[in-house]
Amino acid sequence: MNQEVLLQFDHVGLAYKRLLKPFAPKSWVLKDISFELYRGEVLGVIGKNGAGKSTLLKLLADIIAPDKGEVIRPKSLNAQMLSLNLGFNPNLSGYDNATMSLVGLGKSIREARECMPAIIEFSGIDELMEYPVKTLSAGEKARLGFSIAMQATPDILLLDEILGVGDKDFRKKSSDALKERVQSNQTAVLVSHQPSVLQQFCNRVLWIENGQVKMLSEAEKVLCAYEKYQANKTQNGGIQQKSVAV
Image 1 (cartoon, one colour):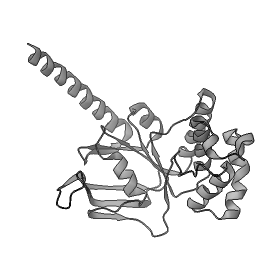
Image 2 (image 1 turned 180 degrees about the vertical axis):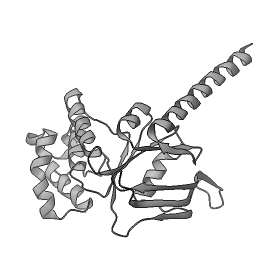
Image 3 (image 1 turned 135 degrees about the vertical axis):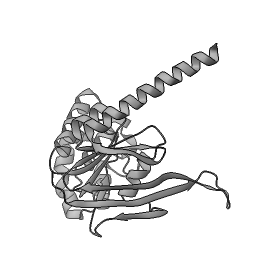
Image 4 (image 1 turned 135 degrees about the horizontal axis):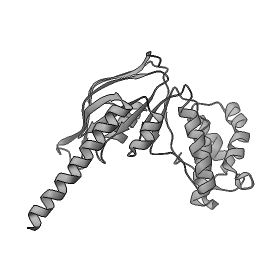
């Protein structure tokens, strides 16, 4: 694996106000997070719901800024979150939404138009592209959104539990496309609750627990420790419930 550091978190912390009041206290979602992301690697992120995984992706995408510490990156670095909800205008056609979305992802209008044949071919909704997006079904919108997102060429691809969408055939097609992307030299960060997915795709895994780094190492080592931890929690929880019942 190429050991060139592409991006670095240096003691990063981020806090949110949970109540919309002027003097409401902040709760720390992430605390003292430090790690390096190497060019060409796929870094997995695992942890329970509310651990701070999605917040971490927003920091990586430069959507939000940390309250403490620093995210060190080149100014030209482009980190793109693969999202099926690309802010479609429901009254515009599939063509117009695709063009606007790709421009929003950093492409010129000419480049966006050059991507259109690939989007149409992959999505399989050629006959619907001239209609307003509001007339499309949820599955058709997902096909369009995924097909557009796959035309993005970021330095870092950010994936949040997206490994296939739509009906059975398109789910396999989209899953295969993602596999091809992350198994190339694409630098990626993949958030998932499924250890088997992270084991398959990732070089290393970052385990976040209560907003802090619990462990960061080779995928197999971290996932083994994570699964043991989860099994112990389940077992101890079951024992406690039985005790209370008695």
